[in-house]
Length: 278
Image (cartoon, rainbow, N blue to C red):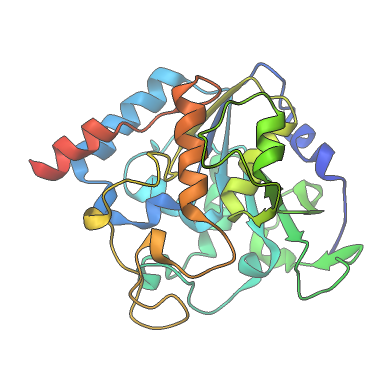
């Protein structure tokens, strides 16, 4: 099945996302089991229930799998949209994660998430440095992955420029930390952070995040789990990954926006530390 490209600006309209909706956006930090001990997972589950979001958006369906399996999302909670980089969505082999075995059988979760919410939207994207070059007008997906009763019109494809500049973030009125506010150079964002920036650009007023490294670039990495011992990120911890992105800058931006109530981080560093030390 070929999916025709739609506008990035329209992507959130497909779940009827409104400016003042309470949004919960789930990121990929959940990949690190050590940062989600049992008591902390129970705490986060209670915070989600307290938040009672109008819409839940998740970065990658295999992370959605983990949010449910770890009990952070209750079994009866519905995810409204999953965003995935097209090639990762399509990938059959191991993922570049801490424990690739955690995601064995991950494709089954495309249907499992549909069972939980038959109207879930799968939004696939390509970015500016895609190996497909100029980002084609359509991409192929295997319709068998979604089951017989799913409305395939809910599978979307769009493209975006995942680069951002610190001056662009500053132009939005945020008084960023001094060492972040001086550069106009373009920086590649991680996939989850790019979507976060897209939601801010779209003007959503009540954006809540969970599963992001949003406690600042000085967060103690001694609790982080290294990547698996093979592949391009072998045995490196999150802030030490050698990529085109700058994870430390993203962590500082997210921390600052949360401190200034532009967004809300559902996670709590003091709670996390107390559970890690107990």
